[in-house]
Each structure stands twice: as C-alpha cells, then as structure tokens.
Image (cartoon, rainbow, N blue to C red; front, side):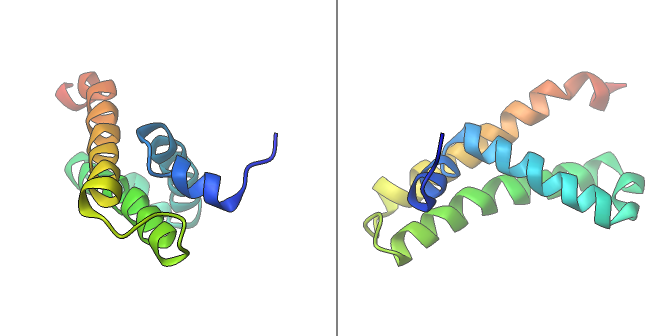
Length: 101
C-alpha cells in the first residue's frame, strides 16, 4: 500500500498518526541520545507533550504551506492540536501504572 506525502501529512494530524510519528521519532532519540534513558520521568513526559503537539501542528503547517489544506484555525490547526493532546493523554494513561510506582 502506497501513501502519498499529502496522505502522510493528513495521517500525522490524527492521534493514531501522532502516536506512530512519536514512536519513530523516539526510537531515533533513544538511539542517538543515550542520556535520554537517564532523564527523570517528569522530563520525559514533558518531551512527550512537546512531541505530541509539534508533530501534528507541523504537519498541519506543511499542509497549509503546500496548499493541501486551507489556512484555518477551526478546520486545520485546532483538530491537529486536539489530536496531539489526545495522543499525549493516551500515552500518559497507558503508562500511569509506571508513573505511580
């Protein structure tokens, strides 16, 4: 199954796409920045939040810049922001047991 660049940008604006993008991004971060593993959980959560918000907003910005989507807060950037917040909430809930322990 082939995916176009436009399709990839749309995918990265969904919470599933954000999760996939973060998985790929963090795999590189962990491999090329060994000190990441030694960071405190609070710092890692903060980085996760930043990644969860930057990925969909950057994809939305690229889509607007390339003319794939209109420049619209309600139609383009707000849904991307919600997707990032949802991805962060899901990741936090999934790891809640580890955070409490």
